Image (cartoon, rainbow, N blue to C red; front, side):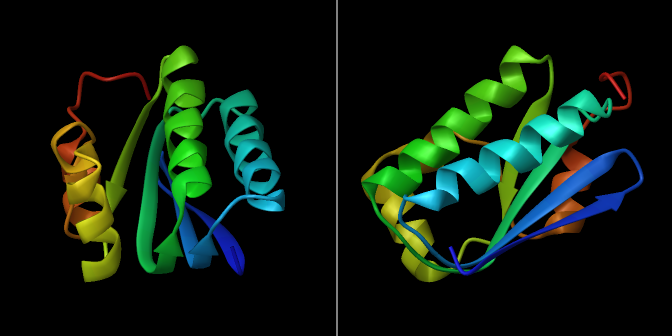
Amino acid sequence: MKKLTTAERGDFVVLSISGSLIGGPDATVMHKALTKNIRNGKHKFILELSDCKWMNSIGFGILITSLTTVKRNKGELVFCGLTEEIKSLFTITNLINILAIYDDVEAAMSSFSKDEVS
């Protein structure tokens, strides 16, 4: 990945990926960002992919590992801003029917219910 940007928006942590998610150091960067925020008491994560241009099978593995890490720590991770290329990959792999996916960050934020862990 070219860059991972992390921004807090109230109770939410928005992780924005730019470039390609293809493995290597990408897994370490993502894991460190998530675990740091989990240690700091954050439980609501949004992975924003509008600038993610490509993802291979290792990239998908990073997403699933990230989801598992967050859920294991009683948090929630949703996805938003899929480009047409990424959306087609999510469709082919059937992840489009398994993961919580929203059009944009605002819609993703609205998806969290008020009675969830904050």
